[in-house]
Length: 302
Image (cartoon, rainbow, N blue to C red; front, side, top):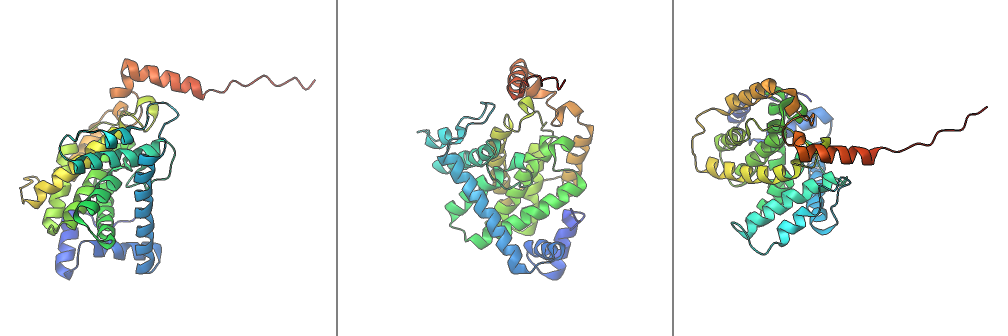
């Protein structure tokens, strides 16, 4: 990926000096990178958001059973459960984040935002946010651009890949993107938007990537739901102007440092954490045996 800004501070200063909204530099960057017109970029964002909404709908209406058997219509169970822990809105948030990620685990179409393993977080948060606050699509598109800008800086200064920085870099990045988008959509200042990113990173710091059987299913699916919840709590805190104490760029650097020091078995190798538990190893053995095709010996041509 190309480089938009080297830091969040640089992004903030650029918008202040030009008196432009946060999404504008990202839009300009997309235009220059793709060699297209602005309207083409907006059309592409619209298409991506439609795929996100379709993934949410598919996960809540179609059969979601993965080949491994670890995914079994969890989103529908959450959505249809008769008692809400906090509120019906929170229940829908969790169910939608689960739904979109289950579509990915069941080989459906999703938007990698920023990765397929974290593909339930932005759909779950933005679809629910739009529903609750009656936001126009254009506002959501602008939030998606801001999320993309967040991901570009995280990739440059740390990582957005579980294989490089653990799950903090994957679901953590998606949650940070979502928190920034939520804060922006609800009228947050540029400072508050970036504070939401910082708070999210502080909450996700150190999370390992330990997929059972090497599949992006468990614990990945439920982590999408919890990351969606963290994104909302981070936005709520940031909008109230609660100090992050540690600036956002320093939080990002800390995430990069933690990722670099994390042992390899905690970076998508399925050699540590939940993947290394007795049950995790048993599932891995069962899944791998299922994947083996017994080939009959070919007859000797002589």
